[in-house]
Length: 250
Image 1 (cartoon, rainbow, N blue to C red):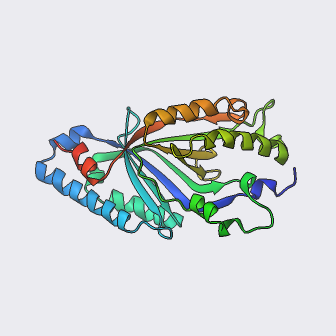
Image 2 (tube, rainbow, N blue to C red; image 1 turned 30 degrees about the horizontal axis):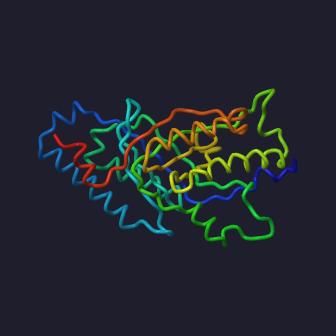
Image 3 (spheres, one colour; image 1 turned 135 degrees about the horizontal axis):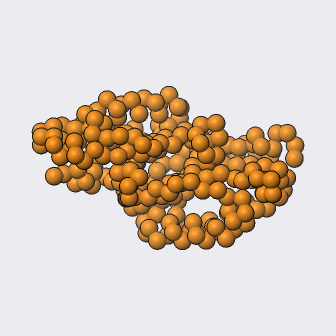
C-alpha cells in the first residue's frame, strides 16, 4: 500500500448532529406565554435555516428522536466549521435551549472515498459527485444515525489491507446499497480527528422498515461482518414547523 492511498478522499460540507433531551418537567412548569415565546424563537430560526438552504449555503433538517437517548436532533450541513459553531451558539441563545440538554452530538465532514474516484478526472466537476458531497437533506419521513469504525485488530485489520483488497470489498458493499435506490438516501460523514468514531452514517427513508432492512442486509457483506464496528443507533421522525409546534404543545 503506497503512502498516499489513505489520503485520497473527497470532502464536502461539514456536518453537525445536535441531539437534545427535553427537560419536560421544566417545560410543563413554564407559563403558556413563556412556552409560546420559546417556540416562536425556535421556529423563527428554522425559517432562517430553510430560507438559506441551497447548493452553496448548506442544508438543515430537524427530527424527533424515539427512545430515551434524545428528543430532538438538529442536522446541519455547512461549508465551514465556523458556521456550524455559529448555528450551535444561535440555538443556545434561544429561550427554547433553556429547556434542553445536549447529551450527544456528532461532528464530521461529508466524505467520498477514493474507491469511487476516476483517476485523471476532476471528480468535483462531476454533477453526481457534487450532489453527494454537497447534499440537500431530503426531509424524508424518518432518519437513522449511527457511528462506525473499521476494525484494527491483530487478526482483522482494515488498514493493513491493500487498496485493491479494500476496493473489492467496498464495491460489493456498494452493490447492496444500490438495491435500496429510491428507498434510502445516505450521507456518510468522515470523522477521523473530529469525533470518537471514524464515520457517522445518516440514513433517510419514507418507510422505517427500509432502515432495518438495509442495515441488516449489509451486515452480511464481508466489509461489515468482518471489519465493521458500530456505535449507538438513533432513529426518529421528520419535524416540519407544524409538527415541531405540535410536539411541544400542552
